[in-house]
Amino acid sequence: MNNIKNQFSIKDLENLTGIKAHTIRIWEKRYNLLEPKRTETNIRYYDLKSFQKLLNVSYLNNNGYKISKIAKIKEDEIPQLVREIAAESNLESHAINAFKLSMLNFDQALFYKTYNSLLKEKEFNIVFYEIFIPFLNEIGLLWQTDTITPAHEHFITTLIRQKILINTEEIQSKQTNKSTKTFVLYLPDNEIHELGLMFINHQLVNKGYHSIFLGQSVPIKSLVELQNYYDEIIYISYFTVKPEKENVLDYLDEFNDIVMKKPNTKFWILGQILNAVDIEQLPQNMKTFNSIQNLMEEL
Image (cartoon, rainbow, N blue to C red):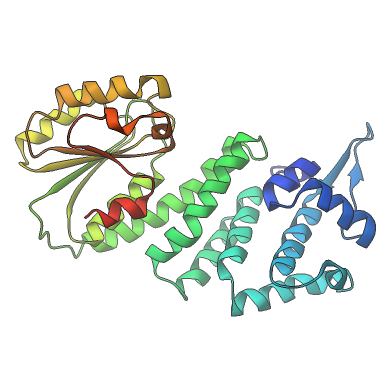
């Protein structure tokens, strides 16, 4: 237990569960649902057991159980009740909570157990859209608020990356290309957040398109070479942290000047950085998308 996060502030609990700190204090005082501890310097904190219990209490509350009723349930019976409800409905919320615990505990076994249980009910595409995307969005917020460390983020995203690769390879081994289009997927210099782009690659391959995945930190000039091999290229990129907001339009202008010389070349872009861009200023044949689903609908 020495290698995991096992002390949480009430703000950590708020960030991890979505329950307001004020509400947590009320549940604590009125129903004795949690028992905060204190450090040697008398600072209040909650242990991992309290965090796990709060996740379960929140899950039951969201599924129609009143807090007053939950408080009367024996502590060791709460997890079993949660499992029973999750088996019948609202599997998504339960799975996301399980992935959070897996991340915080660096628990690969829990990740695999949760993932495999999801696959019994849903196809991989649905698991990614309904579970992984909301979960990854939450991870971004948890990282920004210092609730988790980069080690936690790398641990869980590596496991998700493995699942994307396995599913993509399975499709590629059986694929027959039926399209004249070639999709080239890449990330700009110093951009490393590739899970979204990897899933787009999976979806393209699944639909029978020819997709070339170049991955992280690709210079613009190196993209030109592909035009010597393919006539109709759609480049796709994901701007999460790079290029910086103030440099996005300059980057797109450079991309347009260097890469988009053929009339049948297109550039499709996603990512939160684009929120700062006036899409009316984009060069011709460039298009932005606010989600993977919207991009896939364009095909």
